[in-house]
Each structure stands twice: as C-alpha cells, then as structure tokens.
Amino acid sequence: MKVARTPAHEMFDRDPASKALGIELLDAGDGQATVRMLVTGEMVNGHAMTHGGYVFMLADTAFACACNSHGPVTVAAGADISFLRPTAPGDVLTAYAQERVTSGRSGIYDVTVTCDGDVVAEFRGRSRVISPGRPG
Image 1 (cartoon, rainbow, N blue to C red):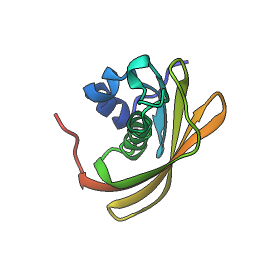
Image 2: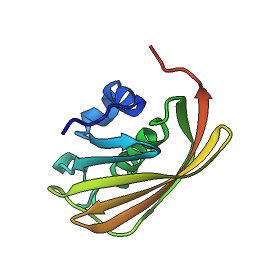
Image 3: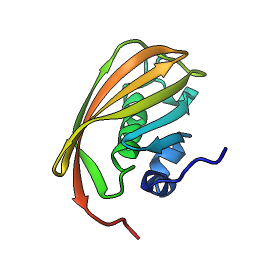
C-alpha cells in the first residue's frame, strides 16, 4: 500500500535535525501525523532515563508534520509538555499528533507520546501559518 505524500512529507524530507535523531515519519495528512524514534544510549540524562528534550523534540516533530499537512508553511507559536513516566535506551517512542482546532492563521494540536502502548508524555502545540507557499 502506497502512502499518500503531503506537504508534511516534503517538509520532513528537508529536516536534518529530526533525521539525525533517527525520527521516522510514519503517517501525515488531514491535520494529523505519527512519528517514532528509538531511544539510544546517547539520549539519556544523568538519571539514566531519556532526556526530556528528546521526548519534546519527537512530539514537536509530530506537531510540525500535523500542522504542515495542509500545505501552508506553519510554525510553532508555543508549546508545552507534561512528562508522565520515564523511558530508557532501547525503548521505541511513538508520537501521535492531532489537530484540535484552527482559526484564521492559528491552530492548536495535541500530541500523545507512547512507549509500548503506555502514555509517557502529553504535548500541546500552538501553531501559526506564516506563508501560503512552500519553501523551495
């Protein structure tokens, strides 16, 4: 089965930061996106758990893909995250982003990060459309 490409796929293709962490785009379209990442030994903090910045970046990547799935260039206006349980090297994290509402050029998106079916973090992002076109 061939996955339909969206502007989010094109944006992700130009995202070396997410790719450097091994983040994979599994699905994007219609205001939603799913990404995943394997936690490596280089991603842990001094407590031997996944550094929150990596969990945030995974959720932020899902958010970016969801809000750019419609086409106009959209960026984060702000975001926050709640960490619910730790993860460790070898864990595979999956982030599911869903558009909640858009109004004019603004939007709100929720992202749930899971590990083996357990919720490990909840993220809320606020988006802003900055351009009707796409970067070259």
